[in-house]
Image (cartoon, rainbow, N blue to C red):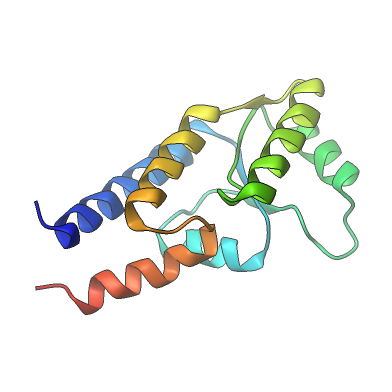
Length: 135
């Protein structure tokens, strides 16, 4: 299979995983507004919370999520800082009784690697490139 076809397949699988997440989790947590935009462009219609909101502390975010969410996905970037942030937020959420869905994160990470990106916001560019070279 050509690299272009592999990327196209990974992108299709990514959209399917996001559809699954929409049904299985109460919220996805991302790092910032550009991550939200990327997930929306990919067709995710569920609840997305950003870690970095002006005027909302991390403690407030955890409190809010623990009050109205049973299961979340922490979808921070797949670089060093994003992995650290994932561990940190996951620990805080689990201490408050929120189940963190790690399987979806792992699957998304594997598919992003196949697309050659490690940040959520970069998914926008990956989709544009695939459309640009579509047959």
